[in-house]
Length: 283
Image (tube, rainbow, N blue to C red; front, side, top):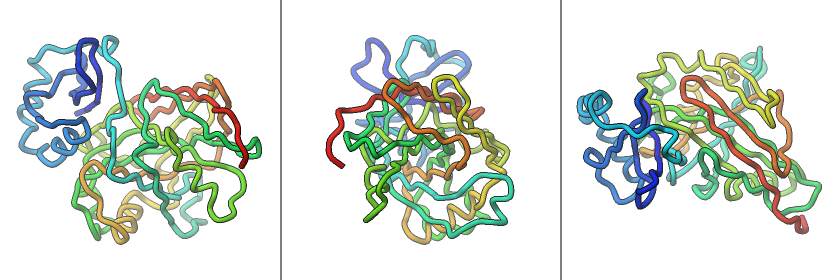
């Protein structure tokens, strides 16, 4: 199944929906919550018991065409976003370095059709979009063994981890990478049962229509299981948290004012974004 957060023309605000071949179906009657993030977390925690009703809804309920709604980030306010330094390239597993993780804030999240706002810093800095597979976590998950990682994953989404390139002293590059809007994700969450083997996925990105990144999840320096295992030795993941599985060093190009960025992972979909540079300030 695929889930989205969307806004309809007459709606009071974003809401959680089921994405089907017929369009988007509202889940208001099944998942009661005051905010979309709460609805997503409720869905994750109660998915097994809700599945029969969701299947019936997909076949029977009235659907709104996707063209008539505005898709938003399917995880509007994750409790935490943990980004892996795993690398994807042929032979990466044989040359791998120690796996590390960084954090982004919930304020970094934007969704389909939104704009990446490049931080207002000196011209010596650049900001590079890194396409990645995101794991939507099911928790609480702590000390998850590598061969049991699927128990901690509800589904998958596309992610862009926008990284800063400039003076790394005192970790300023990682600090700037936490800026608002530098963690786009979407367009949907595809449940884990829909993707039998995520290592068979390919991740692609385009900048202004030209292919930028393209890599296979199979060419990982660290498997998804290894990433989940190490991350959960450090912290507990709760439902609705996000683990970003790293990227490829090839094809990365800095964003410029007015750029268009597309990231696609089949069968999750394509995430399309704009970029805008704010007025520069001192570094």
